[in-house]
Length: 437
Image (cartoon, rainbow, N blue to C red; front, side, top):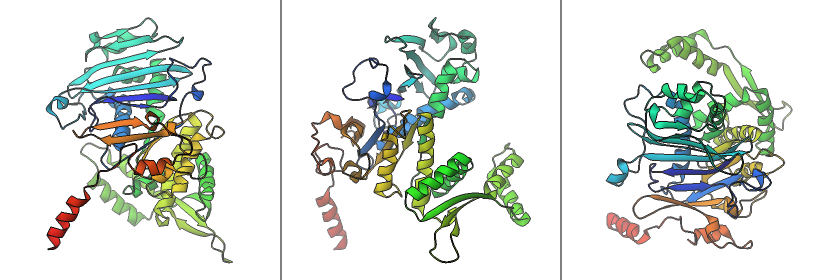
């Protein structure tokens, strides 16, 4: 479970921002009974004005996960990816820092790193197996000699450190070297913290994602349940393989030559493209006529149907494994009741016994109101606000006094919690009147 994520100097986030997924009344190192599920929140929804930095929070998590997954191959890069706050000269030259606080096998871990264009500035890993913090390794600079290991971290740590360059995270190199303990940490952070970028403009990407999921027979069955649950008029989903006409394959071959980069394997790229085109997902709609159900290709389906499957299927995967799903613009292409239903999947202890978590951004304030299913609670709601200097601030609803009978949606829209756009109506009006005249 993810307990907390902390980031400093990433895009619009200049000062340290912290997204906390433990209950507001939890302030211990670990729960007394060892039950992390009782002290963590399954959902965190970020609300705020356009350009307030909601997406930046998810982008920071995704950037950190990508760095952990890929940094072992960064040795040949001239500069490392670095996304500092750009609106003041001081922040541009400073490092960016990322830190995960999470549980693995019931034990709490804290892992983080600092990065600059020139290399890894620092990196650290600790755990709390018996209620006290125990350092596993601590890196104070980019080179192998800058890292120190605790006797509690078993493995060939010194040998692996010699394989590490200034541009590589030790955790990434250790995982690549099959480190017995650090491999588990790496696996959790890189395989079970998933970013679902399913904005409206990315329809083709969503179709490819649905195809990938439905290849698995288990997810195909779940897809059928999901479309019936959503009342989309679909009775069945099928995945079929078709033969691609030889003439079409010739056009695909020419397209391959135009698309691949120099040195890339043309045949491998073509085979991948061909396999994708051979798979066809069909949706069978009840027609109400004697002819029976009518078949439609996925490209003929509404964007809402595709968006629902492209979000709900990976959600079910993370629920199965107890992971974290990040969703930007949850309300994009989804009816509010379907967005509410997705939230309910995570909040249900029966459906989600492993404690998987959903972190999302949204403009849909109706999610703060009283919809069917398990609603958002005050513990689940966060706000993002752009400060006067252009930097992002995030804060939870629990910082405000909230009563059960209060209409949170109405109070938010009236500005009680901040994080709403300050609309300069008079300025816009005078400008338009001037143009019109």
